[in-house]
Image (cartoon, each protein chain N blue to C red):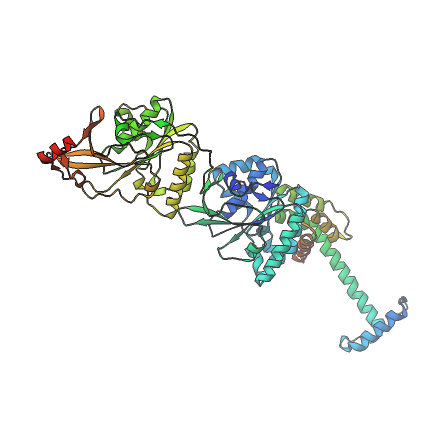
Length: 125
Length: 463
């Protein structure tokens, strides 16, 4: 039940109908109605964002060193250092992984840059 | 345009090297020298100021450099600014099988070609790619894709593969070089070269301190010159042997102690007297011993290059190129004791090529061959080069008056006017003395002659 402190949030009708369909389709989740679904979704999403931000923050601290040590065995050491240096200069958490890939792809190509960034991020989890 | 393989004599066998923008395979068993071939290719171009790229799928670059011969390591140190490497073994533990993908590999290589402006690339060991591309057809398509992208990016790539059986890589490659190694000798063969002529067959190949050496199974030809009359170097020998000309091959056979090496010293001394350069190759005696012996007999071998060839580590192609390097302005060559060298088809081929080249160069050659039987048994031995000899002198022993005396017989001469009789000679303190025809004896060749009856001697006198 709602309280006086509760605030209203508007969602488009199509979204509301989609929520309704989901509740009907997956009753085992135990959502009693669209409001409860939305509350649950917001809780989960907020948690995910916080976790993700935490992962990115963590990744920002280890990524340059990891890149330097892995790529130091892969390519010219100076180049590996240069890439690590550029990555350490990324200040903004927003689109951090994309920025890492952008730096790496100049010397590794897109496929290897994406693969490496993804693996390093997974390793930190 | 041709791109050097990094080995000058190999280039000469394939019209100057690899074709520009080509994909070239070096195949061989473990230890055959594939990686060193690849590194040698890169170092050669780096020395010429080009940026080069090494891509390893298995062994680490650090390890490869550590195991280079000292001379190659030194060269690498001088040019390492231009030698770039991508070592997939370094990232495979983290990235696993995902990294063994031809598209990814091609993208990484072409990206780095652009970054470093490197068009000379070596990809060492493609075997790790095989599991991802199960069938021969899949592998062929994958390698074709890789080759296409490298060529389009302007690269001339060398890649290595293990094994001798025919694989997908051979279909795709523009050039296929096979390296052989049996634990003693190395050989290289050009199996295929798209759109270009090359010299067929196996050639000598050696990993030296400063890089790779190839010893082709052929020698550069020269235009033949007019033969000139020459002297053997022993007083009176011309009367026995007939005229000797530049470009002739003289074969001297006989059992031990008949003076073959001494006659070779006379032969070389004649060159020294005329201020000419000569080469003496011994298959049994080291250089310093040869020099001492020659000096003891009073011969001057100052203008003679003395070479010792260990018969047990004899690589015929390497040998002929080693001597060939010294042939400039040389008028005489002695090969002393070729019987020490075991024979096989390859050695027979090399001897043929080598002697034919000496003939073309108008070099007078003396070959000595020690026959195993001291007395009797009229055989020259199993000599491969007999058909190339213009003159054959056989030295033998004969038991005369309770003494083991020496005789010589000319078995073959390039001229008609040679001595058909059997000549007795002796080796004295002051050298070889030709004593004349042993006319009073018959059956000398058997080793146990008999005196001619007086009647026969008179008949012979009136004839």
